[in-house]
Amino acid sequence: MPALRLVLGDQLTRSLSSLKDWQTGDLVLMCEVAEETSYVRHHKKKIAFILSAMRHFARVLESAGLTVRYVRLDDRDNTGSFAGEIERVLTAHTFDRLIVTEPGEWRVMEMMRGWEDQLGGPVEVREDDRVLSSIGEFELWAQGRKQLRMEYFYRQMRRKTGFLMEGRDPIGGQWNFDQDNRKRLPKDLELPERLSFAPDAITGEVLTLVADRFGDHFGDLEPFAMPVTRDDALAVLEHFIAVCLPKFGDYQDALAEGEAFLFHSTISAALNCGLLTPGEVCEAADAAFKAGDAPLNAVEGFIRQILGWREYVRGLYWLTMPAYKERNALDAQRPLPEFYWTAETDMACIRDVVTTTRKHAYAHHIQRLMVTGNFALLAGLSPDEVNRWYMEVYADAYEWVELPNTHGMALFADGGIMASKPYAASGAYLNRMGDHCGKCAYDVKAKTGESACPFNYLYWDFVARNREVLGDNPRMGMMYRSLDRMNPETLSDIQVQAEAFLDAL
Ligand code: FAD
Ligand code: DLZ
Image (cartoon, rainbow, N blue to C red; front, side):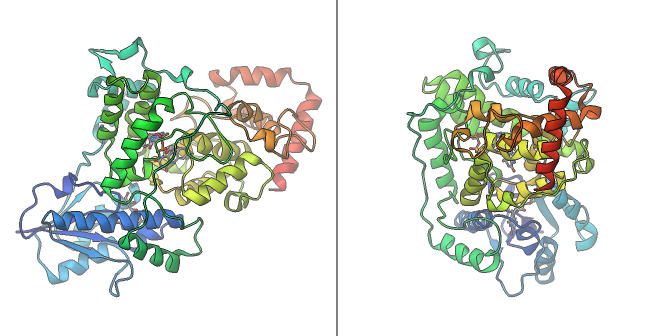
């Protein structure tokens, strides 16, 4: 008996487990559904990217001889949900089972758990073997550990895959070259050109659909130049390896006004929807190192992001959900300020990141972590609201990767499961790593007073405010010793100013 094979919008990979052992008579179902386009108010570019990539991928499957039923968002009878679309197929055809690859998000897994009863037939959920570490493997690694630090997981992954290894030891004698990767961007350094892809007829139709249906969502829809096919995504990867990777390490942590991409790969949206696989990306970087085309600090730094961080956050998500999302260790309750949408703020760094985000549905890691994330942490913004913002505004956002990064890494809302201490920083950090402060209305050198950089007084207010939770953290010891040495009047001024600023948000 034939099988029905459901392929989700972030499963656009030809070798997907649910497409293996294809037999004549089977049917692939792909559907654009309101359930997915609207569960958060995604950036317009994100919706256009996914729908266009899905439509192109359906063509690839058809060209390979598979039979595909593709449901468009504007099809008249579209039920708006995965289950509804499966049911619609089952009213006209008979299949002995539904085959799916495990979804990226808990929300969708919860739906799938109900499908056998709802659909009245067997549902085979296959492991997603595109990742380099399975959910079970991460659980085993985590078992019995007091702390789940990425660094140790990453070392295990290096040993398992052999990337940048000499036998059991890391090439270069060190696992991690992070200390070499914190350079400020020199003023005269030329930044690489980026590839852009002109919309074809398929993308053109999707752009019209998105403009019609989601015109009031955040973000600029056009110009649209994202890689929506595997060939395009491979071109972005090749361009990154040849042109950007050699300097990726040096400027990985840098910030520069008006420069969204620096030497970053910009592959996350393509990687997360399956147009690229993490294994092939690491192989390409490893090969560049072996060929002498990129230095070790760059290649190690890059491979760590994928083999380490990306795999780690996925494992952590599935290990800790759904309770993880409910945590609010610092009891942060403040609503998200309007400038996260409008970019209307005198803080030049935030204005720049929100502007970039609106334009490209992209910001690089340090912009997400140390600018908008750091502000949200210091200001005590509600994790639910901040998580929703990150889910909505980035084209690469899926809860499995967004949540640990935002809730855990940026907001410390998980109480330290992911990070050993909060990534809290004052204006001095932003001034060291970037060039916004020189053009900002605020004075980064001033600790208090009307013109003082808000990150400065918010930082000490944050440290003082969260003493109960953070005071015993050994990695925060230095901050609390500095706080204790602070003149009480200065601290009081800081707290009064912080309160006034936060109340005015
Ligand atoms: P590069 O800097 O070139 O890195 C290469 C690749 O490594 C990325 O494409 C990504 O796949 C992976 N990577 C790097 N850092 C991380 C990380 N911390 N966690 C997981 N993978 C990583 N990444 C997402 O893919 N989706 C998200 O929704 C997302 N939300 C984030 C929210 C916050 C608050 C923070 C601090 C980080 C978030 N990240 C997220 C991680 C990271 O910022 C992006 O993966 C990265 O900026 C994407 O740009 P790039 O492809 O140019 O990455
Ligand atoms: C993000 C997204 C969007 C916007 N639309 C669709 C869609 O219409 N159909 C679909 O299959 N997938 C879509 N996706 C991706 C899904 O949200 C993603 O596959 C699930 O969240 C599982 O991770």
